[in-house]
Every structure is written in C-alpha cells, then in structure tokens.
Image (cartoon, rainbow, N blue to C red; front, top):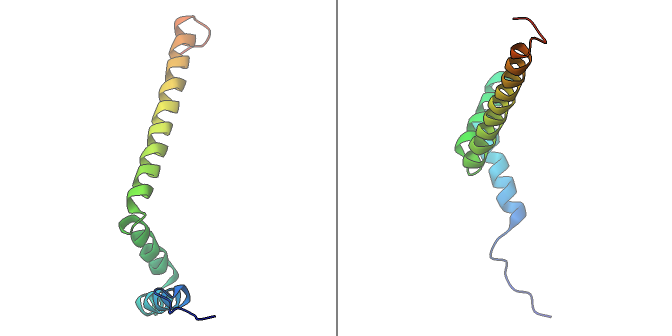
Length: 83
C-alpha cells in the first residue's frame, strides 16, 4: 500500500504553537501569564464568542435584578413589606 504525504501535521503544528507560547511567556510572573492568556482569549479566534458569552451573562444578571426589583415593588405596594 502506498502512503500519501501528509498535507498537515497536527503534532508538529501543536509543538510549534507550544514553543511559540513558551518563548512569549518565559520569565513572566504567574499574574503576567494569566493576563497573557486572558488577552489571547479576548483577542484570538474565540474572542468574539467570549465577548458574546460575557454580554449574555451581564444581560442575564440585569434581567434577574430587574425581576427581583419588580417583585419587591409589588410586595411594597401591597403593604406586605416596608421600605
């Protein structure tokens, strides 16, 4: 059976990526490394997805707070709780 030459070598790609990251973060403190990876996550290919996730979390938090405030206002208007 004849083998065809690979067009893409996943292992080589992964090793090169790890080497590049190592060179970029060597000498950094733990906090600097965390900030490095946060920045990569925000600006990399997944950045748009992360941004949408964060916006959805904020919206959910805002909606939850609004519902809670509405419930409190209804209870106050019925005299069930005091201000």
